[in-house]
Image 1 (tube, rainbow, N blue to C red):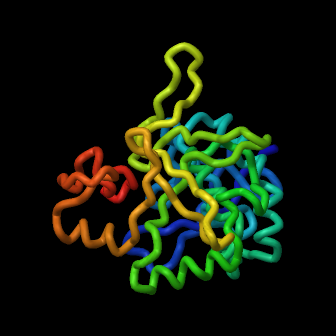
Image 2: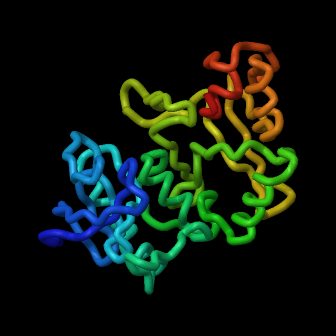
Length: 253
């Protein structure tokens, strides 16, 4: 389904208020629409890049990099969820999705870290319990003793005993694939959220040279960026941008 034109908001440099721009969508559902990105107030076709926006409030929900058919497929999967989350939202009074439990799942699928499966259940690592969202905000203002919030790159699959492997690792590198079958393989830098003593706070571990290592704390990562030297998961001291450093593996640098 498409509409001839829709009105969206965008931020333009040197403008104090968002502009309203008419765009011609390539697909529209009940709440989401897929269209060319808006650059400096002008809809601009960019090969392999599509904006997914909200129709009711006119704001962008995400940028998808890939074929149009994949962008539309993702928007179809999430259309109803966004419609429910943005119920009552208007251009002048847009609803906030800051505490939306599906926020992280949507971002990871839109960024193509995870396969496009649509909204997730409460038992999925990407589903953010409201209490966990509040804890994350508190941690950001705390003393940094919490683990660095790395994105899990291996998550539970749709069936018991199966897992989903992201296309890209946190350091931006494409995942290795089996040379014959093309299946995605576990790789150095993979992150998994293991169950911890607190059901709302998983323990993040990173796979490196055949061993799972606990992800360091926020404070430790900050200290490495200040020192100009960093550690690897196996305890070596290297430059921060060394491919084996924690900072590189976690995508900090």
